[in-house]
Image (cartoon, rainbow, N blue to C red; front, side, top):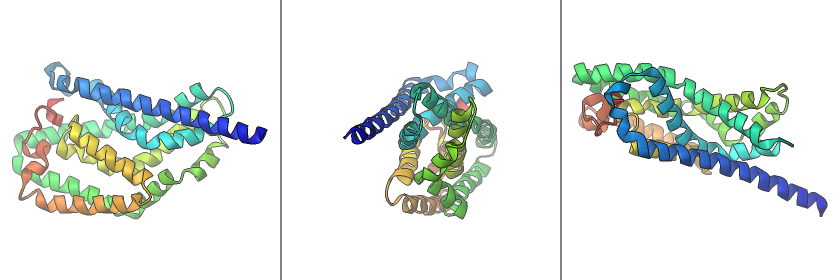
Length: 258
């Protein structure tokens, strides 16, 4: 009975840390909803630190809910001082997605220029964005990264071998790298829909969570890939499918209005 009781306590503690991760994501979502109207401020236009800060909050809101179960599993492998060590794990994970904001910023600048000066090229760029995502969603590399995210036991065994004061940060960053490998092409769709578009954020977050958590997650990934390829063709007939690249604007939430 003592062993069973200890196991139950461990599970509950792991679940508690998952709840902390979810609360962090909820706070990030609240920030996005409350501050999205400020992203059009001229003083912040094309300011890299501001963009990276906003991007980090966005990725925290979108990605942590799908990662919470992995965080709960990892918490069970940490015998003492769980809270600071789980904070380091989460920070490592978010840091990887924050670094992804650097190429995202470069693409944002390019998208703004194309949309402002070459509307026809914007449609072609939108088709390319949809096509890249569609092809990657159907690729073996996507499948491999998604498998690691859906079944992280092997990764947790690897993290058990990490040593040193930075091991929890490294574990979070390693898991974040697989997550980035799984989902980077989905984030590319912001080039078409606009950063800080809450509907795009909500839709993409739902796709990420479904891919990672639902029993038929890989099937969801393939369906999204096929839909993205269809959009690559449809955008030539309906340019407003990609408002950020074709001049639709999305009410100040496009990349060019950051």
